Amino acid sequence: MSQKRSFLRIIIPILIVGIGAAIMMMLISTRSEPKQEKKTILGALVDVHILSKEDTSVMISGTGTVEPSQQITVVPQVSGLIVNVSPKFKAGGFFSKGETIFSIEDTDYLLALQKAEAGRTKAEYDVATIQSQAAVARQEWDILNKDTGIEPNPLVLFEPQLKNAESALNSAKAAVTQAEVNLSRTVIKAPFNCRVRSKNIDIGQYVKSGDRVAEFAGTDSAEIMVAIPQHELQWMSIPGSHATISLETGSELSTWTGRIVRSTGEVDPGTRMISVVIEVNDPYTLSSSRAGSLNLAAGSFVHVNIKGTELKDIYRIPRIALRDDNTVWLMDQDNKLKIKSVKVLRREKEDILVRNSLTDGEKIVLTNISGAANGMKLRDLN
Image 1: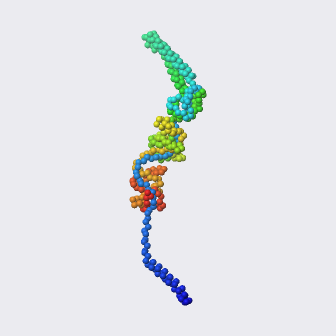
Image 2 (image 1 turned 180 degrees about the horizontal axis):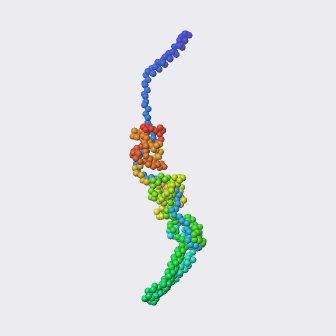
Image 3 (image 1 turned 90 degrees about the vertical axis):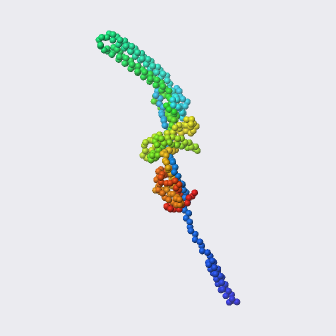
């Protein structure tokens, strides 16, 4: 029995190993060969912009502070007591051209006018009297010296006396004119449509000729001085180019239109900028067409967009699409990358303007690609 058990202990493991080897060989002999798969290169996924020609105007942006086009200091030309003041004569009040602002007591100036007129009347009488005396003297001389041919002394004919009287008359007339002017100066009127910036007088106050009594600013127009790079001048007309002025107050954005009227003509040596002056009509919206709108008040800080030269057949490209050495990346008809040089006509804040270097319908790549090279496979993200 022991020999039989020993035999089984030896033979059974050998049989198990043999059967397993046979099964493995059968599986190996019956398996199919694995198919080889070819790896497909899909290409880099990119966002593209399809090019199309357009006509566009150059836009130059800047900022500036609103200032009145006209501003004056009111200085009376005669002295006296202020007897009348317009109720609008206060800071922020508006006056139309020719409207009375305040009046100075005119009694002394009326009396001066009457005195000057009396002097003129007397001078006219003196001239008439001497003219009559001169005429009589001439007649008498002609009668008494008819056949002598002697010329009379000018004093005999009252010629110097007449010239003196005529000079006195001219002086008297000038005195009347001066008195009339002084009387008219007792009434201070607005020289143009204006707004009161400040005042330091009131009714009952005595003012002297030459005193500074108020400051006024014109309301027909306002000016904004905008500093721009010197090279931007090539894109605008001075004067002439139109501009849009924007003022943001809280959540409200108000706009006005204006035009360039002049430049300062000087370049700032520190910033290399030159300033242009933009004029805006009716900044205080006093006309019926803008009544009720927000005022473009003096001192306001505003943004300005100047409409410059109009360019024809231009490609406007997002600035991010411009690569090193003024090149762009294009996706060709085979969806492959093509690197192309372009001539940049103008660089703006978000775009660049290109002419003649590209073609309608071309796809310009906006996405950055690492290791970009001509012929690289691409896929359109859209």
